[in-house]
Structures are given as C-alpha cells and as structure tokens.
Image 1: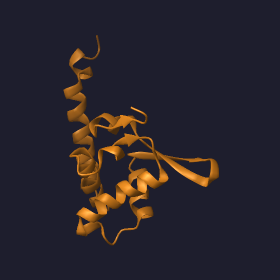
Image 2: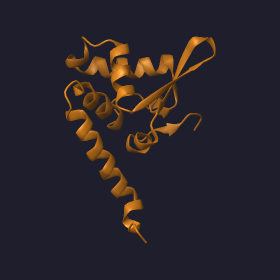
Image 3: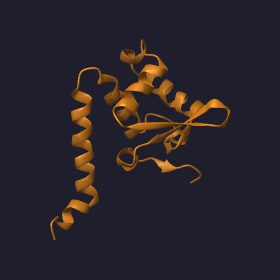
Image 4: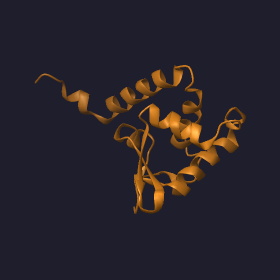
Length: 120
C-alpha cells in the first residue's frame, strides 16, 4: 500500500489536526481561534452547545460563553469571530428558512473538538 495503516489511526489523525490548528492559530489575526477552540475542546462551554450543526442562537451563545471567559475577546464582535472561524475553514454557514443561519463545523474539527451530532 502507498499509505501505512497508521495514517488512518485516530491518534495520528488527532495529532495532524492539532498541528494544523496550531499553524492556523499562530497566523497574525487568528489569536481568537486558540481561545475559542480551546474553550470548546476543554469543555469550558455548556455540553448542550458541543454539537454540529448549531443554529444561529446557539452559535452566538457559544461565542458569548467564550467571550465571557477571555478579556482579549471582549472587544470582538460576534460577526468578527464568525468571520475568523469561516475564513480559516473551521465552520461553514448555510442560510435556512427565515434568513436564519446554520453553522456546521468542518469534519476535520468535529472529532477533534469532541462534538456530537444534533439529536444525540
């Protein structure tokens, strides 16, 4: 085989995601990413919000929970934080009926962050 079976093991994938994320977070302008992702990964947000997808109100609550915990985020708007997450490929946004938004975490991050699917 071209790729070793180890490439498909969960721990190898988790390390790859962690390295990828660390590279993203080090880039100028992405400082907020580390804080938000750390809060989600380390259960500093309510478990009810550790799902994907999230509807707009829940996503905003998730960001507000992170903002409350970090002075560095207090001057950031929800839209600014959303845009940072979107531009870095961590989430993608779909518009649904009524002009509301639905936020999905990229597959790469779903398991890294310990998110579960809605309804479970």
